[in-house]
Each structure stands twice: as structure tokens, then as C-alpha cells.
Length: 271
Length: 271
Image (cartoon, rainbow over all chains, first blue to last red; front, side, top):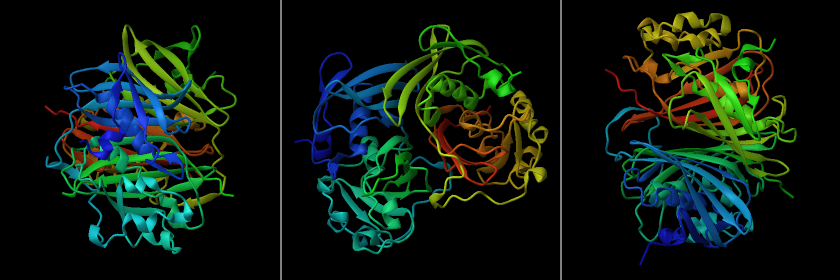
């Protein structure tokens, strides 16, 4: 039986470079399908069957319209194939509308055990996973439905998780451990989920911010993660003029930086 | 007479959503055309004539092959147009080869005077522009030709610029003021240049690192800059397995964050 994440991102080939996929309704927060989940589907489609370039290394996506659960199609277009890299575009389509556009450059990632020539983004300190807040403590935020948290375990550093208890930290920053509860080991596809699965860092500023729709999200993958929970730190640097950013860094359980991302999102319109 | 930067990025319409452009040989370092210069050309093509979405807000590009100076074409494809955003793809082509692929989401950027709801990426301190190292002090690095520095003024903080004098700082970080010497005011297009025009931050680690070819570069534009030099801080967080990242933040002369970028690049192969 496949792991939950692999089943939820499974593609059925349907012609040349064309796939169908069932978007699972519960990979969502407050009715919105998770952006990292959707990105993993497109990255899977662009790397399917390319033995020479098995790993996504740079993935960027524009979220044009929110997709709905159910059937969708993925069209892949190959832009460039060389010895080291292959670059492809993938479009997620529902009905007669394109909803998500991704560009994926694939190559072969190093193992996380490879020696770094330079590293000044060390794994954050703080409480271990057993002392972090389990998902059920954060799923009731603002009384919104967070069924995604049944598919992904997100354990938030108690120093950052006060927003769930009405005591926001006042810093637009969160640290959490991310893992898949059925024991599926992390890989580049699940890292695309991990960098976009924490509660929005702006929750820690207080208020009732609501959902911040992603405009654009780019992820750079740096190494193949070893097995174990992935640690993610997310941070928003500026909110102004209706836009906000959120950057995320992810380390594998051996403490190696395995992914970096930044997204541009819209400031939630609160009632 | 147009400004130098506008002349060098000028497009000649050549059919529907198709342009020709002359890539100017001197917008280059060691023979390689600057990636920010090329990105500005594609962003110009994707926003040409769209009055409702005049400003690029999210620009991501994959550098598949190094283009050569001279004639090239730009093909634009519209992916999605809504009230707030328009998303287009642009491909730079030379001969029968696609060399650069960009996805540009355009909207209307706020003025940098708009009040920030949150801002924890303040403009760096340090010496003012008049106390920073003028471009001629950095153009002789490793005895490579840097004709780009005749088109763009880059004045490096002396605390970071020691690499040019054989005294690298040991930190993979640089701060510099960027401006266009003929007085062209900064705008979103020139910000795409600014975030990719500093010497590589890895120069400050010493050695003779050579050119680090960009694989993927994504820029998020945050506000329309006021007139005056743009301050840019660049930083490399990890070098491992043949890849390195370089992130850049840019502030306008009023101290407001106007652009954020990150690129994934290849570690130079030194002889």
C-alpha cells in the first residue's frame, strides 16, 4: 500500500506528457488546498521517468486560481534537456481553466552527508520534537478547519506557538518539525510540502489574519534528506501595500540545510 | 536620447508577442552577459503595453544556456490575466536554441512611501556611498574583464570589498550601492539588474572562485523605488555538492525594502 502522501500525489498517465490527478479534499486548510501539496504534484509530473535528472532542484510556481478538490490534469512541456539539468514546465488545469503554473529544473541532488564548503545557516536550536506543540494544539486556530494536519505532523516550537493560545509571540517567525505520520521518509517532493505547511508566520503577529493566498513560491532544493523529521523555520520580513513575503529554510534530521524557499503572498482581507 | 539601460534593453516588436533585441556585448563580466540585464529584457517584454499590470512583482528565470552578444528574440506567452495579476512567460532565443526561460507575474506595485504593517529587514548600516569603493577598485578582480561596470555603478562597502585587494573578509556577504551613472532613476526593471550585479558574495571567501553560473533566479519586487542609489546586500548561505545559493535584498534611498531575490548557482570549477 502506498504512503498517504504518495497516494495523494499519484499521477495517472493520460497521453504524452499528460496526466490526470485526483486532488484530495482533505489536503487543505479552511477549504483551500495546500500550495506545497499542489507543487509536489507538478514536480512529480516533471521528473517522472527522467533517470538522468531524478530530483527537482529549483521549483517555482505561480498560483493563478485556487483549485478545487477532485479531478485535474497536468500538462508537462520540456523546455531544455542537457547533461546536468532538465527544465520543464507543468500546468495544473481544471475544467477549462489553468490554475497553477510551475517551472521545474531537475538534476541529481547530493546526499546531505556531502561535506559543505561553506555553511552559515545552521540548524536552529530550541526544544526537541517531543517538547513541541503537536498539531492538534494548532488546528483550532481561529476555529478554521485544518484537515491537512491529519496528513502531516507539524510540531511547533512552544516559543512560537503561542498564537494558538491567544498569546502571539509578536515575531513573524515560526519553527516546527514536519513529518509524515505514516513513516514515509522525506524526499525532495515532500520537502516542497514541508516548506509551505507551517501555519503562516504572520499568525504570530496576532489578530485574526486569515488565509494569505500565495502569488508565487520558489523552492531551491539543496540535498537529499536523511530519514527523520524535517525542521523548518519560516519568517515574514515585510508586510506592506497588500503584499507579504514568507521565507522558509528546512534542515533534515542530521542538521543539514536541505531546502530554501520564499513566497510572495497577498495580505489577508479580514472581515 | 534614451538612458543607457533603456537602450540596452530596448525591444523591437516583430509580430504578435514577439520581439527582437540586440544583446549589448559590454553588459558582461568575463565574457558572460549579466543575468540581471537579461532578466530585465524579458520582464520588459512581458509587461509591454499592459496598463492594468504595469509592474513585475514576481520574476523567476531558468538560465539554460549562456547567450552570446548580438541579436536574439523574445517570445511572450500569456498564461493568465485577472483583475489584480497578469502572468506571462517569456523565452529568450538565439539561433535555434532557447537560452533563458522566465515567468513574470505583473500587478501594480505600491509606492515605497506606503506604510509598512511589519518590517524586520531594516536597511543595513555602514559607510555611506561616498565612503564605499568605486567600481574601478573592484573591476580588476582576478584580472577578468568587467565592462559591465562602465554601465552600472557598484560601490562596495570597504568592510566587504577587501577581496579586491587580496584581503577577503571571510564572510560570504557583500553590501553595495547600485546606481546607473547617467542618472536613470531606479524602477522595477533596473532592480532586476541591481539584485544580480554585485560581485559574487563568495569572492569574500577568498581564493579565485571564478564565475558561478546561475541556474535559477527568482526576484520578488516589493515597492516602486524612489530616486537615488539602491542599497543591496547579498549573501551566500551554503556551498555544497556543487551548488551554492545567493540571496539579495535591495532598499531604495529612502531605506525601504524594494526587492528580495535568491538564486541557485553552480560552484565555479577553478583550474
